[in-house]
Length: 236
Image (cartoon, rainbow, N blue to C red):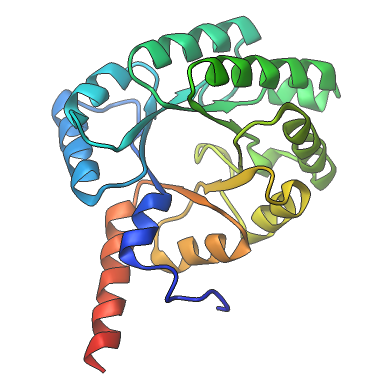
């Protein structure tokens, strides 16, 4: 692995992690524990569905950890108007980051005007409220050409992040997809890798490929493994 491990410390990697809890069956007690743990580790963001945004914001209190709302999740099969409403409501309830899923059916139909309108709508709402915007491609269903087409629209619209996956599709992030997306957007847009990232080595592969954020439900174990490796280096 060519990545400079000296630059990826436990203190830096936590700021790259969007810690996720997106299951359909989560109690308030589990959300509270999740938020308290995320605040203790100081992850960049907690990623949740839009309904629990308000309670997670309350559980986090004055923590600097962001609350990210998953919009149109996980299939993307709601209208632009529905996604716009969900985005506005999530922001009103405390979300300061938005991860929305594209309408993959319209992409497959090559209805690129629709895809652009959808992305522009979400970006405009986020800019209005100074909220970070991310678009989820769900690459496991896409061709390389389609990924490139989406990246070009993202560049035109000026979204903050392009994201590989929901974690609910048939496949998650791959270093190859991250490199492809990074090669298309350069430094103008950041890349978020998500889906199937369950250990430190996988997270580091995504970072090496060009990811600036890592979406994972395994943030705690990733950070603890990195701490362990740093301690072993210090003891050598």
